[in-house]
Length: 208
Image (cartoon, rainbow, N blue to C red; front, side, top):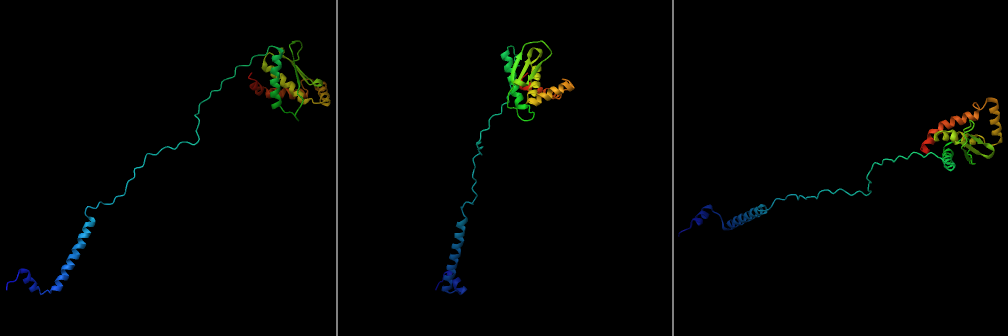
């Protein structure tokens, strides 16, 4: 009886039919596993992290608007016009009085305001005086050639208004004048010193 080559091989290997089926089954299973693993990697794209393209940053709007800084050049005040009439001089000395009341303090505050009067007389040597009995400052405006000089004399007399508040102060002033003379009178020395000290600031306020 003729046998095929496969049968001859099997016969020589002395392999039983059950074992052969088992080997074939194992071979098929292993091949299936290999093929499955192969399919897992073939044509499968590699995982890459997604790159998200962000929009350009936007500058946040300011909550508080900042005003533009513009250099402001102060406009100089025009020079003060020199008074001519009595009314103009009175208005000028009222401004000086307002400055004096705010800036010159001597003892307790003086609630009484002095009266202001002017004269265009050029007789005598008196530039101005304070009359205690009626609380008046008299100014001889034409004897003071400049507004600055008029302002200094007015400050001087305003200091007398602060010094001489009652009858006893007036008596003391007169006694010192008799004993020391007008120039060395303590009241006059203080009034001269304070009028010189405050003059520049007062003239700056008056724009003169």
